[in-house]
Image (cartoon, rainbow, N blue to C red; front, side, top):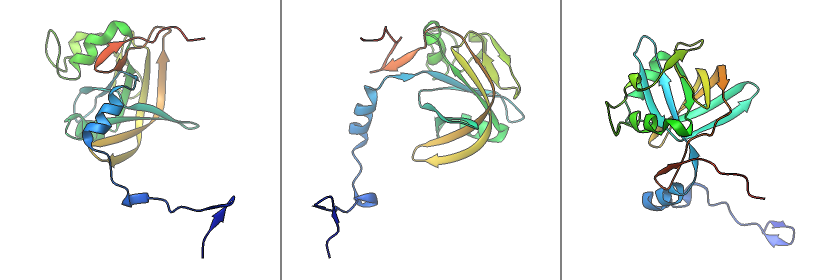
Amino acid sequence: MTDVLAGSAKKPHPGKEAASVSAEAFVGAMRVQATAVNVVTSDGLAGKVGVTVSAMSSVSAEPPLILACVNRRSPCVTTIRDNGVFCINALSVEQSHLADTFAGRPANGVPFDFSAAGWTTLGTGSPVLVDAVANLDCVIHEIVEAGSHTIFIGRVVGALHRDVKPLVYCDRTYGAPGPLIE
């Protein structure tokens, strides 16, 4: 028996049988996507950490949920998990040096050095970057393991923002969004 939908045969969904693209093809396609640059921080009994991430997104407005993806090889994963809290600090165009510092490759100074910037805290005690575009202070809502990364979904318990240009990353280069195209 053939399923018919709007006069055409229904094709089976490839599902899990479909082969994945190569890592090189995937990275090449993602490399040309412009993304915001963020430093995810945490502080608590397990210690104080910060790491640069570009994989961050809102999940829900009610309740306010946001996610950040951190490479599972990063020691920050265990610390964030154990602290149960984190803050997503969206960098401004003036803060590209912090992106490199918290990616472990500063032009000057020490990798992961909190003294490279001014910090404060909100409710969770996680470091909140002064003069960031936005700060989203979170308690962990859910943790998902996916491929090479751990996805931290946080319930936002504190938020700040400023009207300045965000730092973006595309094709291995930092930049800023330009004017809207009309």
